[in-house]
Length: 436
Image (cartoon, rainbow, N blue to C red):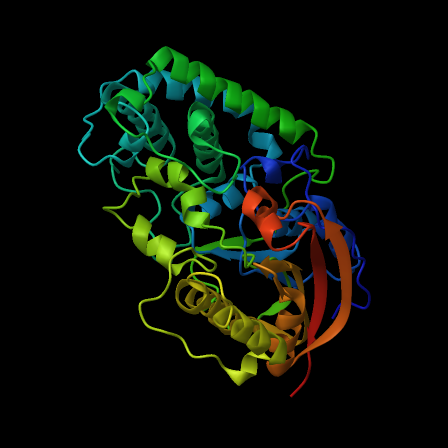
């Protein structure tokens, strides 16, 4: 349905002053990238834009700014909160300070807090956990439900309708506050979080320090919002979010005009561990769903219990790559790494099947994807996605490649044993659903 594609470099700068950069999310593309695409669409009536790997919500945020109906899906509930926070209405900004004052006042109330098995105890001592839970419960009771002590969002399919954009904004502030406190547990890998080794290494902080850090994060977020030149305000366009899998999208068949998305990269990024502190704030730990979430996310470092057979429908490039992985001489190539890659490609193929189902005839899908390596074997993920898409009836209209210096593989110093360069190619692939 797009007559032309205005494709710019999708790379997002970590210094980008944008509400879509409120949440520190490794993956994602820039607001400008989405802006340049949406500028080409003249008829915004009854035009629906979607992202089946919505992440921090750049697609849904920019679609809303343009007045398009939009839908976003992510299996990680943290990303629903991050995406919904980005829809904070500029008219609500004057209320942020008085609401903050009310939250601080309520946080001094002595709530009944169960410390046993609290996932925040992975990093904080008991008194610090109490301080943090008092602040979190103040937000929950003031902005969500005064009686609700349960998780605000379950891991099941959820629209998040019970939590407002303002509530999501303050939860993102809370997420950022905890991440700042845990800076000594964050290493060079932006997607991995360490835990305290023993009682003595758990963090001790008082409520005064916590409140000051929380208020500082609110100021930083509001400052980013004031510089967000591409996002002038909230429209009345409907935006729907779901905690769901891209392998089973909660959308009607042939209901989406345009998909702009970036699937999880095939670089063994553990997106569940990457958001472990934020999931802990929601009460999601090993005893309450973290392991299940981690296992179900695409690209996880865990492997399926049952082996998955290679399908010829995945294309020659994928089949060739998997065979090379299986036959590689390095340790665990035939077992762990072969299984993890096969699981990844199976999930991607199932997701592309769903994308094809929900797209309208002649609808478009724009995918941002990065190539990678297994040891010395090139994983040409852009070409694999193209071949999988063509099997599903999606015709390639355009591909643009951009050199990237931010490949996650460069973090591992042992990578130079297999190749000299750690640069990657980030590709933007534009597809069209052809008529049957």
